[in-house]
Each structure stands twice: as C-alpha cells, then as structure tokens.
Image (cartoon, rainbow over all chains, first blue to last red):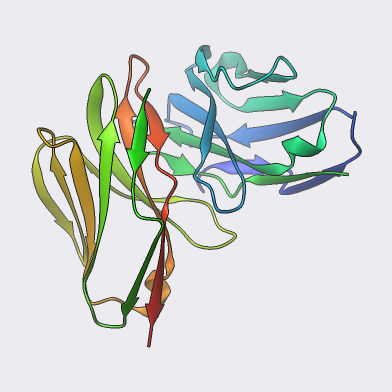
Length: 112
Length: 110
C-alpha cells in the first residue's frame, strides 16, 4: 500500500460549478477525515467517517458540501455551486489509531 | 470551545535545540499529536502522547502534562531540513477527531 492518495491534485473551476474530489485511504484504516487548509493556517476539520458512517460534520460547513464513504473504503467530497472562498487545499487523512493520521498530498482547488 | 495555542514562529540555528509549546483547552481529551508540514506538502505524523511524560524518537521528543493541559515538541541537533511548520493536534471529543493548533513556523538558519 502506497499510502493515502487523492485525486485530482489540482482543480481549477469557475464559480458556480460543482466539483468532486476522491480520497483512497490506507486499506486497513477505518477512520477517514477531510480537512481544508488555507495558506498560513492549520487544517480545518470538515468531516469524519468511521468505516462507512459519517460521525461528524463541521458546523462551519455549509449545505453545499457533502461527503460520502460508500462501503467504508474510498471517500468523495463534493462542493456544489463553488464560491471563490472555497479556494483552498483539501486534505484527506486516514488512521487506524486515534491521533495518528496519515495524510494524502491534497487537492488544491482554485475557484475563478 | 475547544482550542490549542502554540507560538506562530520560532527561529533557531543549525545544531541547536528548540522547544515548541502547545497548550490546549478541550473536552474529552485523549492525547496530543504532533505533525510536520513542509511548504506545499501534506502534514506528516511525528508523535502521539496519550500518557504524561516524555517520548523520544530520534532527534525529536514530545512531552505531555495532562494536569497542565500542556505539551511540547523538542527538536535536537537541528538541521536545515527541519525548517517547516509544526502543528499540535488534540485527540478529543466523543468522536475523537483531531483538533489542530494554527501551527508554528520553524526557521533553521545556518
């Protein structure tokens, strides 16, 4: 297993369009997290899955954001009607043990 | 609310020792993690302390005091490649998600 992979690495989209990102976690990891990070800031929690169950979603997240993890394997994060403020690095992480998360390289979203 | 505080910037010279402190205010605390992130890269896991005390892994050590809601990351024999941002993260809450500090930017100078 080569670690957490995310696709695409970069995405440029026009304001108002929908985008979807994919994350493939480390295979034996049951926890999967999505974070958003902007320059000079720490990762901001978006949502968290344990297996296929979405256990928590940030209250900061608008209804335009949705995430799924069917069958407890890969996960997708969709942003509908993108806004310029959505431009950020979207990071996925997986873990088997709490506190020890392994991150993918992220998807950098630019909304123009 | 839940929050972590760490210094925004630290500067040191090669070969020196530097300590990055982290204080936290969380409910349902389980442990403290440390991550390193180079510019343009993803965070990488360094350490996790669930119990009080010092844990050493090579040049890096991490300390936790639950009674003081405080921890630190100690970096010894600093190298230029250690220049990066360092984040503390609290494993906390009912769902045990990581809550992150804003990060400490470490600059190692020759």
